[in-house]
Image 1 (cartoon, rainbow, N blue to C red):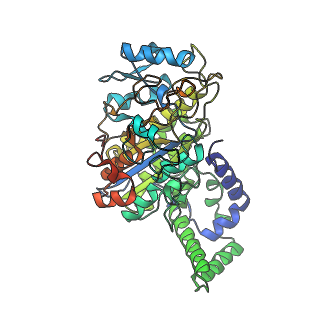
Image 2: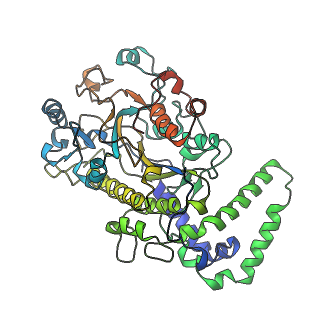
Image 3: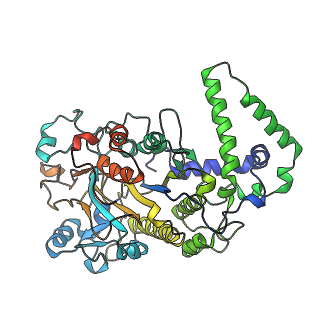
Length: 486
């Protein structure tokens, strides 16, 4: 695992805790009966509703094998350096209109590309300001002009999630944007606690990562709802938390508990809905049907997370507010070994991860279309960093810098690419290496996290002044604030 607190571990801890305490929590939280667990036949939402959905690919996705150039000159450069990791050109999914192809495991995203609703953004990374290779090489490693601890998982994850380039910020750019825009809810995470959704005073709202996870079995139990000891416990806790506290810390804790009761009563029903169960929407279930097992269980973790988010978007009248940010995650992208089985492009660790990503995102986009919400919802990827252009001796790749990311949604100006694809030359203008031992193809980013986030947040309704406040390095990029993909 590459995260300091992996989402999978957080999910397991939460699941075990919920199951051990389910009966007590049900009575205490008063989550309601079957009658109020439905989404309704149509999603109710404000006319100006918008949602941003971040999917963080923990470990550092290999963007160079996610989107590959297909013109002869660049493909030959790619194949010569990548050797056994090179995807056969004939295996790539065509991206009509540009000289690139998608990894064959992303076939579920092909319809979105054909509709012009998917866009790759090239050579993105953490940057303080625009920087040439010569400028980068001239600076000492300790310079404040260089993002701190490049190629470090934990530091670069923090810098991508916070929009700060020195891994010192407590708050995330999602959290700060939510605060600046005064959204009704904080960032909602279905991937455990995350720096992305933090503000200086508010944590993200963390919900289970699987439909009905720890909720469905007990929210619906009438005997639990009517069990006198649990009702008495809830009443006692309400009195306790409503009372004035002697210290600021005590008051903060009481406020957090009051909010927890309120949120649980409001969202418990939505969280409890399982595929095919009471209150499920056919539009969502149909979109995710290819990823469901026999009992309506989602077959992959990311599919479960995006199913949860789809429900919350469809139930926005219950969730509250006309703007909402969500956070999901997929771990395992630290592919130092066994990244690809030579000659079999849809096998190996990276192919499996991209299939999970593509299938889940494709189902989510199909659900948004079926709900007629696709123009209101934009999904985008983030990751620690890219991978080296040269493979290592373990049929894998190592930590690098600039990377390719994907943006998906009805409002996306897709069918084309954004950013600047790196020059595929070891030791060239985009490779930060000079000496022979460091010529690995660690691309110096040409587009920053700030510009990427600013494009997303401007669509989301943030003003220029709010963008400057949320993204501390944005002003260093002058007029090149937005990338145009929305």
